[in-house]
Structures are given as C-alpha cells and as structure tokens.
Image (tube, rainbow, N blue to C red; front, side, top):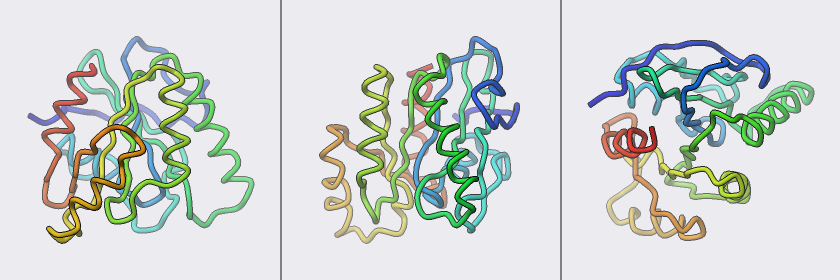
Length: 187
C-alpha cells in the first residue's frame, strides 16, 4: 500500500521547518543516489518530489506530510555536486543542524547506490544517527542495474553498518513495499 503524501514546504534552515507533532523520517544520501525518485516510488505519485539528472538540484529540506502523524524529509545530497563553495557550505550547515537538532526526526533512510556501496560519509552519517538513538534503515538503490551475480557482493559491502540493506529500485519497484512496511512500522 502506497504512502499517501502531499508536499508541505521547502525549508532552508532548521527554523523554516514546520512546528508540528509529526514524526519525521529523512531520506539522505549522495547526490543523484535516487532520493527524490525513491520518494516518488514510495508514494506512488510521479513528480511529487522533483527529480533531475544533474547532481545537487535539491538544495533545501523538502517536507511531505504522510497522513496525520508522519512526514518524510527529502534532504539535499552530499558528495560530488558542482556548486559554488558558499552554497555547498550553507547546505552542509543546514543538514548538520537538521540531523543533530531536529526533535521531530525519528529515523533516517540512508540511500546508497548498490553498485558503489557505502563510503566514509555514509559511515559517519550512520554514526550521527546512532548517537542520537534514532532508527536507521539502509536502502541500496538502483539494484535493477546489478547483475544477479553481483547482488551478494553488493549486500556484503554493507556489513560495516550491521544492518542488511533493502535492495531497492525506483525503476522496477523492487524493495519498495518492504521499505514502505519499515517506514510504517517506525511511524
């Protein structure tokens, strides 16, 4: 069953975030890992979150209401996006504030390209989430691009998290229902 969602706002700072009592689950990952595409797949609403082939298009925290008690937060990507240094620093500061201080944040869905596996940034992000005592779900995106013979190796790359990832594809729908179930359970 899809997560019925509606766009609420784009926040450019922690102060811009809504003052509500909803639990927030954030989607985080590298630029172009598929955060917006995955959000669209989870909700079943094509175009709800704007997607782009150009890294770094999402430069705010985009919040989507799910029912009365839950919200999804589509965070800007980190990594290789080409943008002015001042913009990159503003985004990094905004994300740090959100991840460290947002009281409504209850969980993080960390998206990692299944072909690439996790790196230093992902391990650091997981540590921040664990230090706050929040739930962590790892979604290995773009699994439709893996050959069958590559899947076990891709899953094994996530061993440092101590969590088995959900292999996901916004293109063919693999893993989307499992991810919805985990998100609903956290709500």
